[in-house]
Length: 107
Length: 118
Image 1: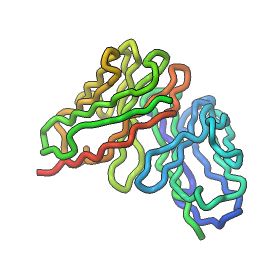
Image 2 (image 1 turned 90 degrees about the vertical axis):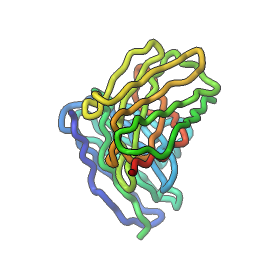
Image 3 (image 1 turned 45 degrees about the horizontal axis):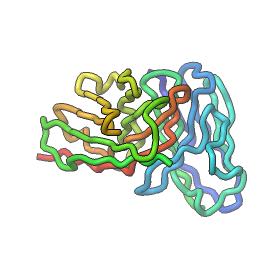
C-alpha cells in the first residue's frame, strides 16, 4: 500500500494568513492526488484533483501543487469558513489511501 | 445534479453483517466508479472499495475478505456488505462517486453512523 503522510497534523492560524499543508506519498503517484476539506460533523468535500486542478465552485484562494511524492495545498488568505480538517488522497493505485489529516484551527 | 442518499442499519452486534445501500438520484451510472469510505469516531478517512457501472470492483486489501460490494443499475443504487463486524468497524460510512478516469471523490452521500456494540 502507498502511505500518505501529511504535515503538520494540526495548525493554528489567523484569518488572512497564508497556510500550506504538505502531503508526501511513499511511492511515486504522478499527479493522482486529491485534497478534501471536512468540517466537524459534515461530509468531506473535494477541493482539488489531479494535484492542482480546482474543483468547480471552490474558491481561488485554494491551490494545489506537486507531483511524484511531494504535494502541497495552499490557502492564500484564510477565511473564517476555512477552519476545518484537510485530507489528501492517493488515487494512483488501490487501496486509494488517505493522509491522516490536518486540522486547521483558529489562533 | 447528482445526489447520493444512503441508508442502512446503524446498530449492530459483533459478528453481524453491516449492510448499507446508496441511492443515486439525478445522474448516470455510466462513466463513474461508486465508492464506500468510512471514518471511525475522531479519526481520519479510510477508503473501503469501489465498483464501476459494469460491476468491476476494487477493494481495500485490509477489508477484502469481509466485503461484498454490488451495483443495481436498474434501481440506481449500489450496496456494501461487511461481514463479521467488530467494535473496530464502528464508524461513519459514506458512499461517494468518482469518475472513471479520475478516482477523486466528487459527490458524497450524507453518511451513516454505524455502531457495533454488544
